[in-house]
Image (cartoon, rainbow, N blue to C red; front, side):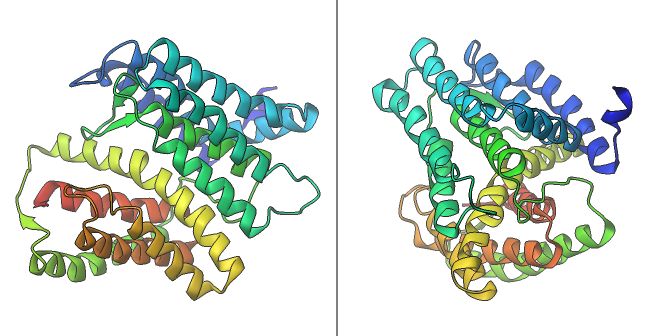
Length: 325
């Protein structure tokens, strides 16, 4: 049995991240408005997420799914039931949040349920991606956890990524969803080039538009590293999984490589319209569109979502550490 669970570089990196992140979340996840038992509820989803990032676990899960096909609907159903029950028992989100769990999960499942297709059609991919994006947006103040770097994530967000890993990596494996975390020198180099190029353009533009301000918030090296780790893993990787691995690939299949890349970037920018105060901030949307172009370029050059996530996390780190908005 042990011989079947061999670890390569990608396994080792993912496993090291999991055994570092999960205990850290358990120890430090409750802070600010994040409180137990909501933190514990989120920790379960985070543990599933990190487990599914390990390629060896993915291989085992595919074997289990092959032996028991009913797991294809049982696992999403478990996510929906868990989220709805947590909202009812622990959360304070109300009826809409309770109903959103089975509605979003069912929509994503149905979009990918056709087994007669070698790969889901582009329209099905977009449908599943939209349903998961809505699930990620479910917010309940009593169901949140603090992650490294001071960000607070909700149960819907963590569950969305774990479910996306199950659907797109295990149940319906997709070539476009490459979540291997063991990046090579070239992958890292491409991510750094994109980060530097974007910063050289976006920072002057943001300052000129009055959206960005020079506002250093450097605390210490350990804090900076923890923040970068959290931004790459909990913000960059999930968003790149959905926008580059699913949305951009679907647009490319519907149009062309260049058009799909641009459309996904514009949608990425539009999704940021409501993520800043005041809402409908067009300056933020413009800068986010530019960032989406940079992340999409990294993904096109490397084929690795982790490389795009590294660029994504670095850009957010630069903004959060040195610039205010």
